[in-house]
Image 1 (cartoon, helix red, strand yellow):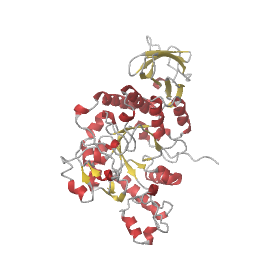
Image 2 (cartoon, helix red, strand yellow):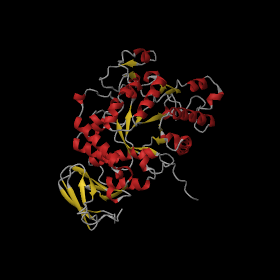
Image 3 (tube, one colour):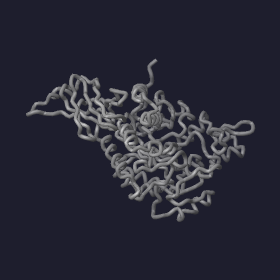
Image 4 (tube, one colour):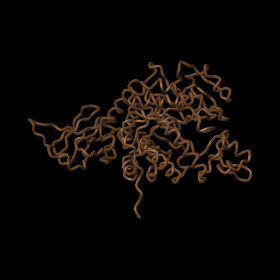
Length: 478
């Protein structure tokens, strides 16, 4: 029996760099302060906090009820910032009506939370983003809802029509990880599937470009496949990524997963905990059929900030370089590009820093350079991955056109000279490679490239064809 092929990956995904935003913490729009919006939070049991006060975990988890006032209007007003950075897609953590600041406890999927500006703000964001060449990806929390969800409240009153949409036992109901405030939907029920599809298509019709599925492992392979099919039924150019913290291979029923395996492998390598990272990255590439749709994650709203995990600037830049040169879609967590730090949730959900004097401008410029290279070098967008050396880490991004080839290296040790075989018979002897970051040169001889790598260095060597008095040795080589 033939294996069913993957759903088509939207064409725009190859060219995409995503910027993740936790809306409450990014920017308050329309000239407001959190105090101006106080009633939106306090009437629903929340409390407000000043913008630059770091969030802190509380024993009773009351930190989920602390609000800073960020909204979708604010994101609209910062589109120019995102354009200048170079990103061309925004992933928003949940925006639907919910009790908490994180909104993973949905009350009503059909209402954009008024705290974020409601439906008018979302429509405006979609319009302005699209006018500026930026896609919008929403967070779909479909494994569970909040206990205040309109349908769950009806179920709790004994209405059988709605009770079957959840999982009730004799004396209790099933909650996500046993949490009573997050009752799980009965995903096998046709009525539940129809309900979720209605939600998905409502926002696709509004013009969003994709969905990220929360708790992908809890949804299970069949629900991931079903929802992808419904998204593709709407349009093959719509994108669906699932939150999975597993080895990436085997989840090919979706366009991609949040590839935390990549981030963990890279970070552990740079911190000296994984001496075989190159082999593992190559293995994952070969075994993951939808790798180009997967997200290259280094941090997110669910993890410690990159600046807290890797304090050394060289090593952090090396991680970022690998994020932008490994196959997949780079995802920049808001503020990471200016050096914002933070521990685990909720410390990783600090407010965005808008005082430029407090930015790490060097780091932001590095991000801008990597984003530009990612968008201008074909090999970094869709080239294959071939490991040339595990340590120092050297790999080829092999492109359909020979003169688009790039070779990436990271040397986190002493200065060294290394000779690597480059398995591409189109590369002719004597061809020069130039490092796009430093302008250093290297030459290939007989399929072998000799590299002199400075101490604590990284780079991206690209083929450079030299035409001599009208003679081009690549005249019949493509």
